[in-house]
Length: 329
Image 1 (cartoon, rainbow, N blue to C red):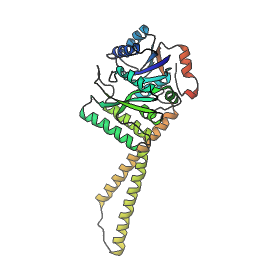
Image 2: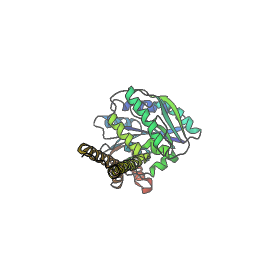
Image 3: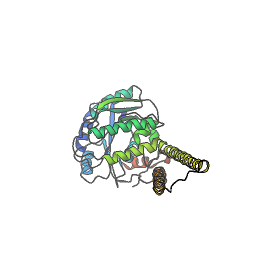
Image 4: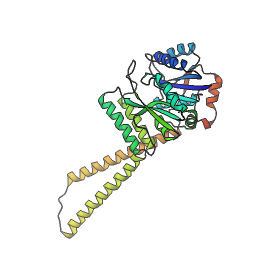
């Protein structure tokens, strides 16, 4: 029998987690010929999210949950969840129900047609005009500058075939950008359009600052443009400096031009030089920081508590370095 794995990251979603489970379970119950597991990753919620998950897991053995010892970030929690799955395909959706579970049958239909990645394309966003414009602008920009083919207006709502998930299991990325990682793997991928509704309840755990951080992850993980920009700018500034110096020498030696002392000009040039140096050192720092995080295994999710997870399952997840998965008990 074909097995479906649902992965649902959660952080302080006590108002949504029960409704999310109920709607997902109702959809799965209406799918003949499939068995399922529902995996929640609790990113160290400070509300009643995990106690509610404990109640749900006691009622339904299909539900498994992992609570981390600290908040490791959305992308790391999602990557952990992918590595914990056992299904023939994995469907990722958000706990706030902005990704409607009722679209799962359509995703399975597209998967049955031979597509190994099926992703949702956001036709309409519930965000305000500014945030929606920033989102769409970012998707356009990252697609234009990336060496990989990244679909525009696609979020985290996707179905992924087991072959792709096996490739994810071999990755050990401490600053993952999951939608970009999966898109860059290739295989046969197809999108479908849907209207993204507003959150069912509660406040978004993804403010503008978190969106900006995700944008930086996407940019740094999938493009060398910032480094090339630094190199190009240094060449341009060097060329301008050389031309100015040449004009100065020509004026001085050939035309006897007496240039007045330019204290203000000197200060401006020094400040511009310092600003450029600081900016590009910051760009280099972004890349070097990620190398540091990778070598020190920073942001590895540490599992504090589990629900419906047997010791055998933990043993399976701790195997092989080839699985690229870290679970600390």
